[in-house]
Amino acid sequence: MPNNLHTINKAPSHCALYEEMLASVSTNTDALLLIEDASYLVQHNEQHASLLARLLTAFTQISVLRTEIEARGLTPNPAVTVIDYPDFVELSASTTKTVAWF
Image 1 (cartoon, one colour):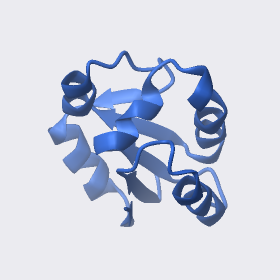
Image 2: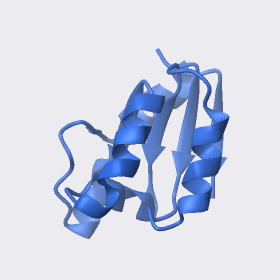
Image 3: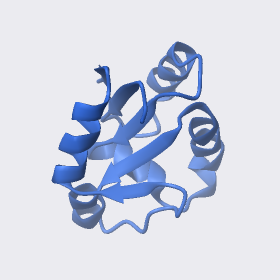
Image 4: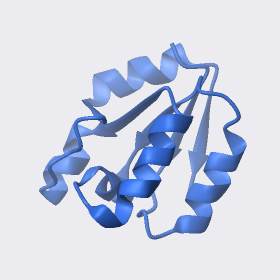
């Protein structure tokens, strides 16, 4: 299980926030949950492919809430795990701490 859970809600266009988050992750032992506008990152898109590749390398698991992708009509990248709220609760409870990036 991951050590820490990072959540981010900003769209991928907020590059500085994503860079700050990536700089804070030193090992591949943390999980990332994409919420709200951050869910746009999972869409198959050349513009976001490089950022998603870096995140996939930095985090042991990347997830997105099913409700977020359904609300936006997105087709997620297969490398990202789609989870429901009970999975989110389980993931949160299994980590040492949660770090929110807003």
